[in-house]
Amino acid sequence: MTGSLAVCAGSCGPGNLHLINGLFDAHRSRVPVLAIAAQIPTAEIGGGYFQETHPQNLFRECSHYCELVSDPSQLPFVLENAIRAAVGLRGVAVVAMPGDVAFRSPPKRALSTTRGLALAPPKVVPQADELQALADLLNGAERITLFCGRGCAGAHAPLMQLAETLKSPIVHALGGKEHVEYDNPYDVGMTGFIGFSSGYAAMHACDALVMLGTDFPYKQFFPDDAKVAQIDIRPENLGRRCRIDLGLVGDVKLTIEALLPLLKTKTQRKHLDDAVAHYKRAREGLDSLAKGTPGAKPIHPQYLAKVISDHASDDAVFTADVGTPTVWAARYLGMNGRRRLIGSFVHGSMANAMPQAIGAQAAQPGRQVISLSGDGGFTMLMGDLITLTQEKLPVKVVVFNNGVLGFVALEMKAAGFVDTNVDLENPDFAAMARAMGIFAKRVEDPGELPGAMKEMLAHNGPALLDVVTAKQELSMPPTITAEQVKGFSLWVLRAVMNGRGDEVLDLAKTNLLPR
Image (cartoon, rainbow, N blue to C red):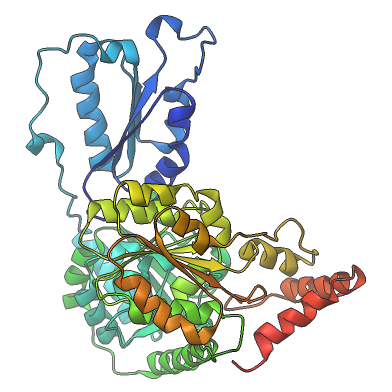
């Protein structure tokens, strides 16, 4: 939320093991975190003592720095090194410390001043010859597409100028949505498994692709024939997702500003206009799915996401669970430069939305924070509802209650398997929340949704909306492979043969009938 250092702590053994998934998420998302991991008494280490683990080994993979403090005299410089690593390298640092060491007399040496530990992000610009090489590549290309990720944060204005100069459509990865989608006449949507057909097409129609601050991992979505240039502040990202013709290490904003004077303004707009027209068609198709007719149950999740976006505040913070809530958030939440969208977009851990919402609300108490929780993820960490009341955090939780692990079920269908062990027998989440002292409502009728959403968001305190959504909603990728078509055909055949033809009928009704 702030870019500043966050601190957490866990008791020895199982206590700090609970930190691992969150620390992996923070580390892979390059969020500076200092974790204090307690350890068993020093004299017992190595003897199989109660709750014994070895945190310096356990946390090594999800940290830049991980050290054990076995004497108080170590603590000042180990703590300083940990903070510098977390802030300077953007990630996690772990300090493990036995309880008996913590209770011993502290050393007399003082810690470094804040100035020495609060490191400013480096301002990196490529060398002049590298910038000229990129300019030559772009000046010689006819159809350029810009592909933007989270590294474009703060670069909106120069990015728009670059797109206008090159007459380039802008495609974004999920991490780039909140930074480039708004106030953007060059926007042609997202690519990837949950993206738009227009984003995919714009990347495959270009003769030059410029990757800007993105480490997009899905290699099959990159074009085969285009020349590719990549700009990233992290040199290890260059060329690791696709073949590149030119790689530049630099801050996206500063690099674009240095590049612009070297570029020739293009006049041919056909590539841009075609991509924008394709996006408008794709957007209209997606928006046609985000409708709700009073009395026409169940509620479509697209409509739910749109209602959330329409009623949320202008500076709302959204957190989205891994799975289908991320799909609907990516496609239907409107960004404006002030709103934030947070998720487990790199690590991909279930049950992330509500804990992230708790953290966001604690960090910025005055902002509206909305958790888009899947029913599967919500039930994994349902006990955190008590945290909302205990800490008096006015987080708003919207549960996409479709009674199934939706993304897993979809993957099974696409592979041709009859989905098993994905159905959920959910309680009345609203009744459960009310039992904990939280304002809550359950909504099943689309006609009641806008009013219930408005009331829930206006509540002065934690609140929950349990929304029953369509179980068989398909979140189709922007391009469908022959293997996926074959897989769905096999699923239909196997479902019917296993006496589950009603599911095939439900899927057809959910996705084909007018809304």
